[in-house]
Amino acid sequence: MIDDSPRQSALNAPEGVPKAVVNRLSLYLRELQQLTRAGLETTSSTRLGELLGLTGAQIRKDLAYFGQFGYPGIGYRCHELIDQIRNILGTSHTWPVALVGVGNLGRALLRYKGFSLRGFEVVAVFDVDHNVVGSEVEGIPVFHVDELADVMRQRQIRLAIVAVPAAAAQKAADRLVEAGVEGILNFAPVTLSLPANVTTVGVDLAIELEQLSFAVVNRNENA
Image (cartoon, rainbow, N blue to C red; front, side, top):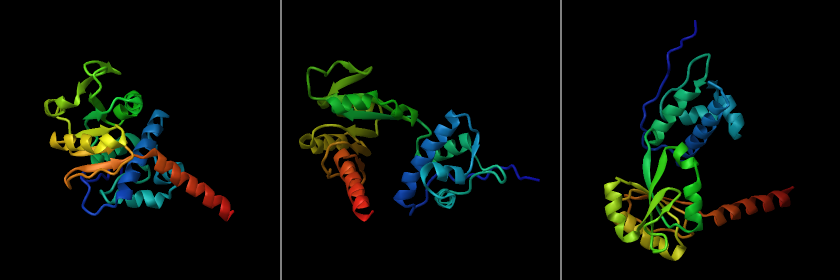
């Protein structure tokens, strides 16, 4: 007889979980969501591994940092594992997010629907351009940066995106920190200097392309 009782995990990651494991959790979540959209109710570590170019053993090892998941003889129930991973990642509720900078990149980010699908909602935009301050972009109000602290407090915003030129990025980050932001996603091509209690993730598309070109050049040379 198959034991159909779920083997579920604690929801908080223990200390010492490698960053690479947390990064892969986001990949697992994305693939599981795609599987559910395709109408699949269950999957296996082997199937997930095939989709991501990983082994089933790697996926089982990653999930084991947080407990035991799945059903013997069945594998993973997609919706349940999605809920578990979202709880681990802290995205089981919607996070209000601020965006600083409403230039071309900022506008593109506001049009990106993936944020809301993954539990993030940009609720306020900040800029210094009086031509856009007081208006709405993609239905989201644009405030002057001088209003940043008040708006952040009123809307209980703890996460922010910086999409300003490199020369303005540090100042924007400093103002966010002063307003109580705890996490910053930085699209400016510069390394920010932040207090230890503020987490930052940098996204530099030029660097990513450099890594890609390095891989292609070296693959061709070693062929």
